[in-house]
Length: 99
Image (cartoon, rainbow, N blue to C red; front, side, top):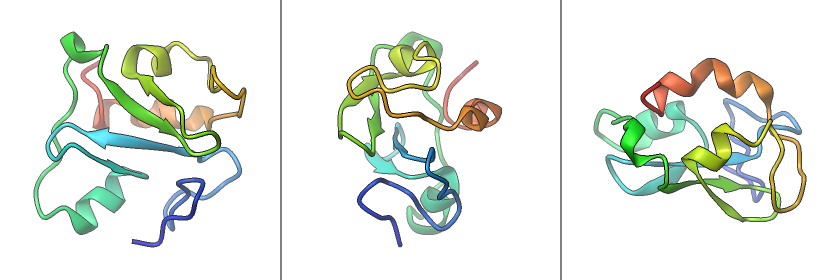
């Protein structure tokens, strides 16, 4: 699938594109929805609002896992290692999480 050790993929690979998201539908981490769609063989399912405590975000810098709620509230910075996350990801939250 072409994901490096920092979870950067062919679709998103800037210095700040360092998260992976666990998909509810298959309980597996993917670097982005395109990576999921190219390899999973099924349609993605978004995490519901009631599931915000689920640890579904992986920091590709320190490999700390964040809950969805913690990720949405982290101001684009890993609370464990302070690595910067891409603020542009907010434009795609609805592809992963019920907003």
